[in-house]
Image (cartoon, rainbow, N blue to C red; front, side, top):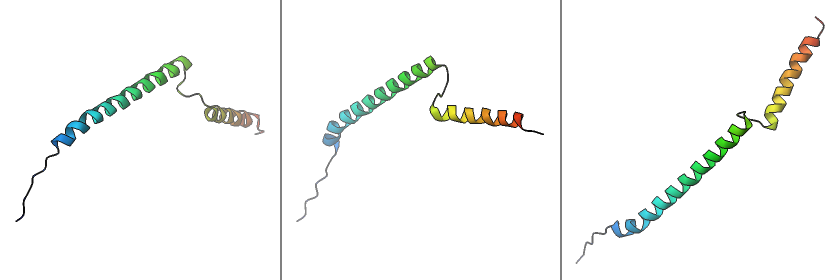
Length: 73
């Protein structure tokens, strides 16, 4: 004689859902804080991107323009 038992995940979900909601809210709060901090720093700098590769590319571009102007035609 087989007995069929219907299981429900409501008890497990009632324990897991608050934890998942808390973790999601915590991650979103941290992400928003990082976004605000980054936008404030970029606003203080006045430029969107100031990194060493960008300045190197700008210098090379200007050097090519100067070299082009100094060439004998």
